[in-house]
Length: 192
Length: 407
Image 1 (cartoon, rainbow over the protein chains, first blue to last red):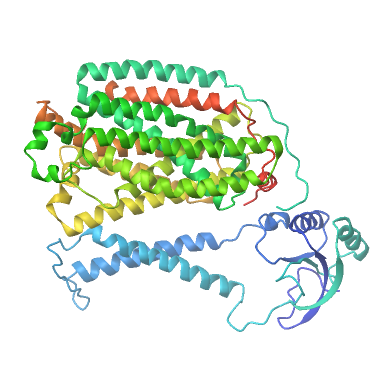
Image 2: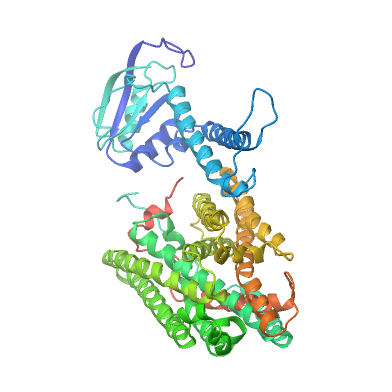
């Protein structure tokens, strides 16, 4: 038996102990109870994002919003430097901008810069955040699904336990699933 | 969250807290004194402040009605816990109508230059606009706007309350329809109302985005007022079902639509600045000189920069103290926004035609008067209305979703 802390081989497949449910509130309460009673919950699979599931699983909040804020600041910085440089800086050798009089406005017309500030901030925040997520979760185009459970992209809610973990107790897990109205208990091959 | 049972919390019957009564009485007393003092000081100043206050609180009521309508027809669930408070905001509309009619009957010549016949006679540009800019039309339109708003909000309140009796889902569907109809009429009426009441203070000037700008100010005011009243009612021991997750959503409304306000502000300012057409730039030139510039920037800081930065972190949207701070800032900011739209226009009009000597911004008891007076009336009106129905619409089909709402 592998210890739960050990990182499995990237390509190794192993079994997951899966309970299937039909209602959103069932998956929320079973996730909470399984986590509270110390069962080795691997993940939950739902057809749509279920609010409160990460709290029920006791997961910490993602760091990605903070990264997004940094990307936004970067985008704003990019927009400021792009516009001030091209429109104003004419005195740095080898790094000259190209100041042009447009509509009789001054060379640093801040109201005219605002749309570009906005666009580049949003552009950088959105795109780099998505890229960060895809890289962090290893969801590149063409990546294979780690686990395939029938129905979780349709109308089923699944909770997966790690049966190889030390704290896994099949009887306890089955009893807990049954208490929350499980429709089916499966064993599914998955890549960790 | 679906069909499983959700426990509806026990609920205290609403009785207006003593602190509300005291606050309202103090506001009305100070407000009356300030209003009287304002009219004794100069009638244009008195009427300008009555106009600010009337538009401000009518805006809060309309912002709440609009949110009620939109949340209804998009089948929103999270807001059912605060639905009754939003309903009660709309009871201010009749008061707003009285205030606007008073202005129309007694105060026109102090505010609107087009209402003075001698000015109209000598101004070819204004004569071309006289089909819209005449006192009779103005008064008729006030009645039309308020009749539409009061009818639709009355229906929305009625259906919402009828559901408390039977729990029939058809009332939710009725409100989907009334909400959609209200929204269409609201878009038109709020545009024309803002042209009538505010934009025509400077009748030579025009801005095609002006109605949207007023509308979003109303929306933000209503969202901020909602936060303050929710927190105040919770302090008095009501609304036990409102949790951090609801705070989060209320905070998001202020955050998102405060930012939308800034977007519209820039859209108006930047295009006028860029095209640099004298008929349009006059509006901003006045507001960038004689000390108005400080208010011009304070307006931006209170209404967008500070709320945007403060409300960005998740924790701040879930913290009642910070929410109250930002709500207060936005409410002050939108008063300032109206002040900056109305006062430069009316004080210049007064200086040119009534011989008043005013340069730049001014602030005194005269400015506090009407806004505090109507604030007190607002608290009394909504406090009374809250008592006319249970605080929780417990038979709404979405009440389970609202009570178990989770971010």
